[in-house]
Length: 114
Length: 118
Image (cartoon, rainbow over all chains, first blue to last red):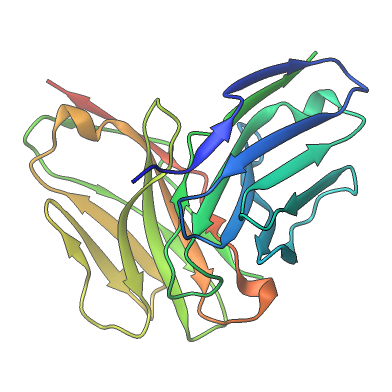
């Protein structure tokens, strides 16, 4: 079965612009989580969505937002991009929300802000 | 707050040899899960092995096994018979065992870059 699909794989944006990243979870998975990976800060949790509701949010400014659609696909949006937003953004899907459910990750979107 | 520490930024092993990657964590919770993930150059985070804190028996998956020392809050990964395909960044991660929304996240260590020498 298809894995977690993230689009696009690479993205270059200019400071001040906004960007939308997409994540399609494994079929049947209803939970989607987002992580930011940078050399300086490592892997940091952004947010989790389950059944179209945000269940948890990491310590990121309000410029970072997300949503989940009825088909469980999720998008995350970053407005007013800063150079420090350059990172690999990873999406992970899970059958449901809870500790008994494992995460499957996508290959990420590499965002470069210039 | 929970933290995960990986003190070895880089490790190297000869093909067919055994290597152990270290991980320590800090938590006041009694119910939690620990993971080792592998991230090759393809960037996808791949689950290597998972350990439930309530289980005393160390988890094993083929050539991969862990040494889980709950009292010492240590969770090391042993890779036996190392193969070239094992070369990757390895991350140790923690997840609370709770069901509340705030617990639904992985807390990662900084990673260990493993090189496998032919």
